[in-house]
Length: 468
Image (cartoon, rainbow, N blue to C red; front, side):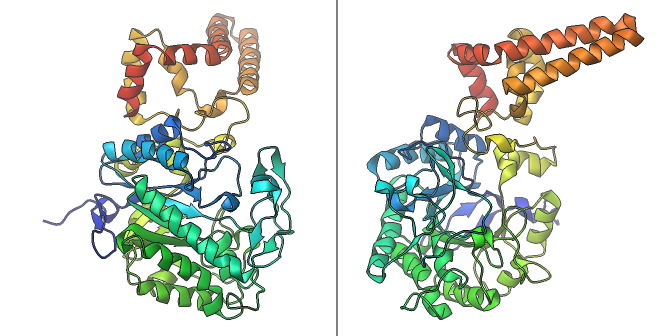
C-alpha cells in the first residue's frame, strides 16, 4: 500500500561512519540566535525550557550559534562552549531535549569581523581574514552598551590561525561533553569561515588567500580538527552559497562552492546545511535561476539540508522531489513551540514578534521566548478559564500586545470605538464599555498577576501540562 504521508514527515538516517543519527521526521529546527545568556554566555533553566518546548521524538534541533572562544563573540548575550560553566549550562538543555526523545546539535561560531571591541576580551579589535570593514552594511553590532557601529577588523597573522582551529576542536569536544548529539560548524552568513572563503573579503597573499584551495583552507582545517576528536556522524557544516550577508561576496561562487562541496564529499558528514539566499540571507547577483539547493544537490552525495523561507507546501515539495533530504525552519519555531505538529496537521501558525527575537526592551527574558501558546493550550482554554478565574487567558495574549504602551493604544482605541457605537447604537454601548474595562484591567495587572501565579503549585502544574 502506498503511503499518503508526505516524505517530509518520514524517517531519515543522517550521514556518518559509526553511529548515524536516526530521525523520525525531516522537519529540523534551524539555529536561531536569541541572546538570552548574558555576559557569561551560560545557558539557564529558561534556555532549557525553550528548547524542550520545541523538541519532538526523533526530531532534530540545531541549537543557536555558540561562541568557540572569548574572541569569537560578536553579539552580547550569545552563548559559548569554552568554559566549564557554559558546558554545565548546556547540559541542562541537552537533558531536557533528550527527555522529550529529541536530538540536538549545536552550531559552532566565530563571528570574525561581525563584532565590536565591546564584545572582545580587553576591548581588542575583532579579527578577520583581512582588514576589510563592513562600511556598506546597514546593521550594527549588539553590545552590552547597546548597538554600536562595526569597526575595521585586524587581519589574523598566519601564526594565529592554528589557534582558531584548536578553538573549534575544543568547542566540539565540549559540546559532546555537554551531551549534544553533534556539532554544526557555521561556515555561512558572512562570519569568519566565510570571510576566509570569499574573495570579496579575503585579500591575503599567504597560504590562506588567493586560490580557492587556499581560501577554503581554514574551513577544511577546522572540520578536520573536529573530525580528529568526533565521529563524522557527529559533525556537520552550514554554507550559504550565493548569499552576500554582511557584505561577504565572492566573484565566482559556483567555482568556490563547487570546490568546497567536492571536498566535503570525502568526509561523510552527518549533513550539509544549505541556506537559500532570500529574506534576511541577502541574495547575491550570481544565484542560479532555480536556486541554491538544486546546485548543491547536483554536487553533494550525502544528506542535504536546506533552509530559509520554506512553508509547508515548499518543504513537502523539495523533499518529495529529492532535492533536499530535510528542511530546517527558523522563525516559525520561534512562535510555535509545537511547530512540527502544526506543520504535519496543516494547522495555522502563531505570528512571530520581531521585537522579541533578541532580548526584549521591556519585560522578562521569557517574553517572546517561552510564552507562545501551543494548539493544546488554546484547546484547553475553556476548561481552565472556568476553573481558574481566567488567569490563563493572559498567557494567550500575543507577546506583542504585552507591552504596556501597546496596551494603552489598544484600550484607547476600544474606548473611542465604544463612544462611536454609543452615538449610533446606544443599546450596545455597554458591550463595548465592558470590553474596554476588561482590556484595561488585563493590561494593568498583566505584569503583576502572572509572576505571582507562576510561583504557585497550580500554575506550575498547568505550565507542565500545557507546554510539555
